[in-house]
Image (cartoon, rainbow over all chains, first blue to last red; front, side):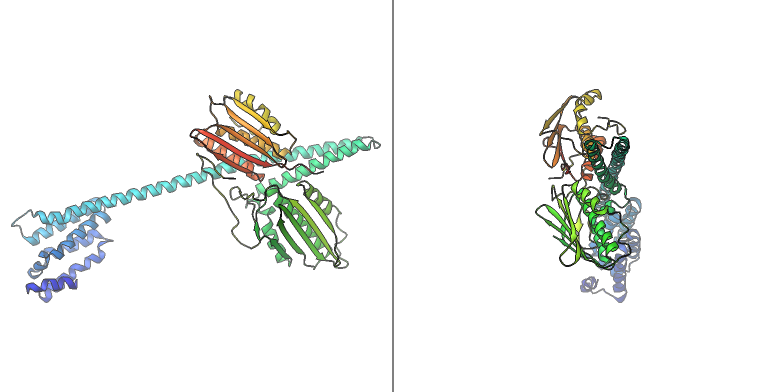
Amino acid sequence: VTCRCRDSRPDGESSPRAIAWILALAVPLFLAQRRPVVATCITSLLVAAAPHAAGQFLASPLAYGLPVVLSYWCGAHASLRPGLLAALVLTAALQIRAGFADAPNLEIAIATLPPWWCGREVRRRRQLVRELAEETRTLEAQEEAFVRLSVERERTRIARDLHDIVSHHLALIVIQAGAGRLAEPSRAETAFDRFATIRSAATEALTEADRLVALLHPDGSDVLRLAPLLDRARDLGARVSVTPTDFHVAPDVEAVAHYVIREAITNTMKHAPGAAPDIRIALHDRTLTITVRNDTVPASPLADTGSGLGLVNLRERLGSLGGGLDAGDDDNGGFRLTAILPLVETNARETSLPLQRSRITSSRGREQQMSALPSAGGSTGSGS
Amino acid sequence: VKLDHRHDVGGVVGARDLPARGAAEGLGRVDLEVEGERRPLTAGVELAAYRTLQHALAATGGRDDPATVRLRYLPERLELEVQGSQAGGTIAGAALLAARERVLVLGGKFSADSPSPGHRVVRAWLPAVPFHA
């Protein structure tokens, strides 16, 4: 603005009034980007009513920028009709200012209409980009909904299938047990086979029931996940160590590991209340080793309440995955339990949608979810 | 393949019926190949394998092109492979997602690729550790 003032000075006609007017001309520019039509109309008014002294400034090359910028903004930041109208009003005002000797003055029209048209095109382009982005977002949301829906539908079917399997095994157990009751007591071989059948049916049913619980739990398979359990154990005062600090195991293995630790904590609380258990989980050489030890506390009121089946069940569950259990008094007068679980594939890193996660981490509250959404229509890739 | 989830709880053993079922339901031919020694698996794995095959076939449908199903029994896992023409549309997409979910719930791995245009290969494996008595 000051530059413009100086520019008008060499003509020697600058007066305080003209300077004030030129300054006033700059004011609508601040408004121009948000309200281009209003700014242009104010400018038009100022131009048409300008004192004669300021006319010199309007004739200077610097002043040509004013209508160009305003017209461009009218095209780019206003809708079609008000924008065009404002640009025309500005054109008329400039024409009035210039006088009607050589009307229509093409230079004036060139300073307003092409910029307006450019702005208009830019505006349309921006709108197109916005619409495309919006459309992309909608499509993405639709695809996500599709994935979610497909997965949820399949989950319902899986739950139904698992339920069928569990029922089938339970029916088998009932029938075998019923037959055993009626069988001749002397035939030990038959009884052995029968119990073997019952045992494997029960183990399978347990495994599938675990999967079912994990599947149906509203916030995913958290019920059978290790990290929350370890957090709870820490809250109870247990010392927990996990090496390496972060690794992945298959859901089956994690469910059984969860079972082992849960049982061990329960045992400690029952047999040695107040003794903080020491929980160690180590993954080494494709084998998951869980060690829980605690100091014994004499005479616990709950010590005799168990059925004695806890360790037997643990052994069964571990056996179902090819693992084993070792439990007993340790050298320091405490109780020690070691469970070993072989891993078929340690890098079962790939997990399902948020409901099914299988990642162990020792740090609390860390983001544990990993999911790779497959594209619905094309190839569903997940390199192995 | 129209999937009927109420019936045909057949397990991998039921996969033997897939060729006949495919023909009956207008899918076209399904060839079945089995590698390794067939052994009984837990009911959960058997059924999951069967369902995975069903879904994979729904995504590799094609009336005129035969689809190939390969089962490979390995010591600690069961591998499945389905090759065929690439069915498009939402049904195929949903079928692939469903197959993937089946496999992942059991802690297996799943992948679906298109090695050449119009051709689809679905591969998966399920953990099948022999039961230790």
